[in-house]
Image (tube, rainbow, N blue to C red; front, side, top):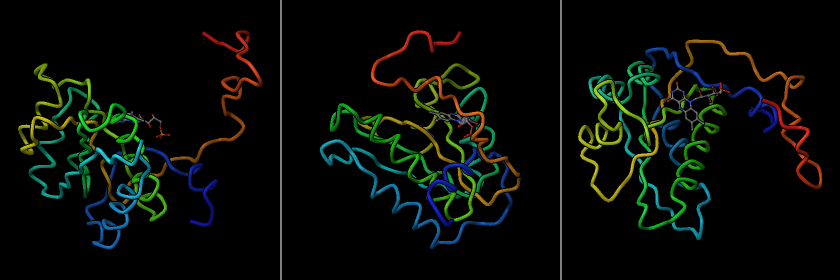
Amino acid sequence: MSNFHELIKKRRSIRKFTEEPISPEDVESILKAALMSPSSKSTNPWQFVLVEDKEILEKLSYCKKSSSKLIAGCALAVVVLADPLSSDVWIEDSSIASIMMQLQAEDLGLGSCWVQVRERYTAEDTPSEEYVRLLLDIPLQLQVLSVIAFGHKAQERSPFDEEKLQWEKIHIGKFNINQLTD
Ligand SMILES: Cc1cc2nc3c(=O)[nH]c(=O)nc-3n(C[C@H](O)[C@H](O)[C@H](O)COP(=O)(O)O)c2cc1C
């Protein structure tokens, strides 16, 4: 990828992946991006569980009542966890680590999609977090933020159209109530 602007313009959520595995070098780059992400007071409250086993990916894909099936077809899922007792801003820290991995994946030409786990429920109304905790032996002191699914892209997505950016969300100097839309 030539420059950062092109990278963020091109990055879109990818929910269909080929069968091709991700090379160990690319997996390492994705993990380095997580481990180099900034965190408040450098607490690094996160932990990451890598899942490549197809059977576990299939089970993980049932972690929510909807919008998680794509996990079954990915080559790698990184489950993002954090210890809320080690940081009061663990959600922010873990979210940053998640998007850093996604941007690194895009830079490698790989697709990715964030699957929200925190505050979500399975089809049986079990908290998604509890479902993932049981499946992956996650200790009680850690909370589950998300599952980031990665793989080689099996779908084309259009890049962002810069003509359609929501400039009304930008307020110059002070908040302009007239810019609020319904
Ligand atoms: C916090 C967060 C939670 C998300 N949860 C899901 C999810 O559970 N399942 C899913 O398919 N996509 C999920 N996404 C992806 C969004 O749907 C996607 O980023 C959004 O529609 C914008 O599309 P784009 O990523 O292609 O630009 C999530 C994204 C974020 C940032």
